[in-house]
Amino acid sequence: MVKKLKTQLCMDKYRTRLRTGALVLEILAPFGLFLGLSSANNLLSVLSGVLILTGLILMAVIG
Amino acid sequence: MPLTLLNWLLALTPVLAVIVLMLVFKWGGSRAGAVSWMIAAGIAILFFGAGLELIAYAQVKAILLSLDVLYIIWAGLLLFHIANEAGAIQMIGERLPKLTGDRVMQALLIGWLLVSFLQGMGGFGVPVAICAPILIGLGFGPIQSVVMAAIGHGWAVNFGSLATSFQSLMAVTGLPGELLAPAAALLLGVAAFPCGAIVAYLGCGWKGLKRALPAVIILSAVMGGVQYLLATNGVWTLGATGAAIAGLLVAVFLMRLPWFKSRQGDALTNDQASAEPGKEKAKSFLVTVSAYIILVVLAFLINLIPGLKAFLSQVKLTLQFPALNTSSGWITEAGTGRMISIFGHPGAILLYTSIIAYLIYWRAGYLSPKAFGGILKKVGRGAVNSSLGIIAMIGLASVMMHSGMTNMLARGLSESFNQSAYPAIAPFVGALGAFITGSNNSSNVLFAVMQQETAALLNLSIPLILAAQTAGGSLGSIMSPAKIIVGCSTVGLSEQEGIVMRRVLLYGIIPLVIVAMLTTLLNLV
Image (cartoon, rainbow over all chains, first blue to last red; front, top):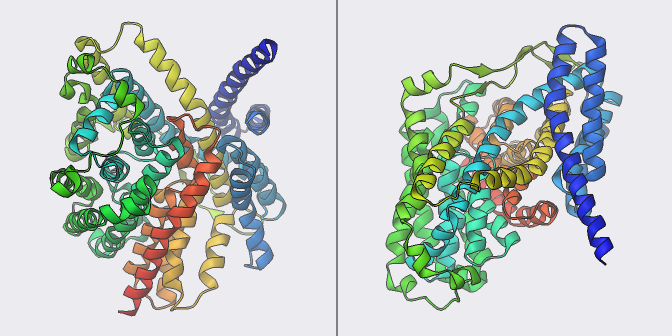
């Protein structure tokens, strides 16, 4: 029982961290995307796009 | 892109996905929003001819819109937790039962009048986030509290938030406020009655509604009348605020009548019963609720003194976007994205209020020196999940808008109905826009011109159809997932938004149907 609770607490802790990570990605990456698109920097655009998608996948998976 | 049933159903799929995932699968807003965003992007690329660049720019525009909203939410949560830590929410919850022992009047006071007043000052779910915990403090259930506060302010959204939605309606249609205000104020004034009646019913059942009916009729007549007078005399920015203040004053008078004053029967809540009278007496009521007094004063000062507003609005964050088009011919003109005034934004007003209130509480000894860290932690905990949900929902709306899917939905609705049926449909188009975007303002930006053109084509009264659009947007915005997520954020219902949304949809449709019927009737007159 105690072990179960500890696992739950640990999962909640990581879930909060992952959510915060997803939020940071979702807020900052679009600005990178805008910079990449407006300066025709493909690497920056693709990287930012991947980060936005990563954030969305995190949201879809962890809720 | 031609309007066919298949195309229309494809455009509807992301909206249906949100509804099904939240209502049937009971997913939270962020998860449902993220999955629906992916569905919308897939449909936009595969069927609506959107390119990756269009989706990318749509997401950048969405983040600007999201930041505009999140600024208010984060600052609103900060103010709420500062006031809560200082005991303001508990004190309001304890003082209100002393005005009246009648629970239905308590429900109306907070879940209808106070929430509408706060909508006049701010918006985007924050009034619900502030009032729902007060209702819980009065002994109402968490889901019941959020639903009551959500329904209670539906009538006040259009002329609330200093009438930003109404300003957008004027801006996009090019019509003067003097022409648009009468019909809009009439429809929303009438909508105040079902909103109040539903709050009374949700709070205390049929018996409560029956007892409160005279008060609901009087208060809706006062608020509807004051809003109409203010809006039709050019003071639409204070339409909802002025109406709610008048409503609160009349309610205080009504509560002194024996009919409501003598009803002391309902038990006090655990919180109230366990409150230590001696301890609370040491706190001044005025100082404790000063956070909200400062908010009202600052909001009025900054919005009504043009020089001050212009001074604070000098620093703005915005980005310039190119014209975007899909291969199927839907074009979004080039232009700036959402402009965020860093120091003159409603979020900034909430932030100034938070700082001043914190200093006042700290000086008065209502906050411990270590309280700041705890407050920030609570804000973070409440804000992260709501913020993710809002970003996902606005992203979804932006993809749909830029790929022509939103327009397809509206065209499908408007072209399927004739001259006599369209007035009943117009409020639902406004409500649909507000449901998708979470904003009456955005619904007007999306659909007002289409409604104006449809009204002209069908030879209908343009001000009436536009009033129905914005009234529908006002009443539809309370049902939107984005607003419900914010409303749930302060009452620990972050995982149960689906259940709340189901109940809000169930009751929220009633004022909308009444507005649709009234629009049809006014069209015949």
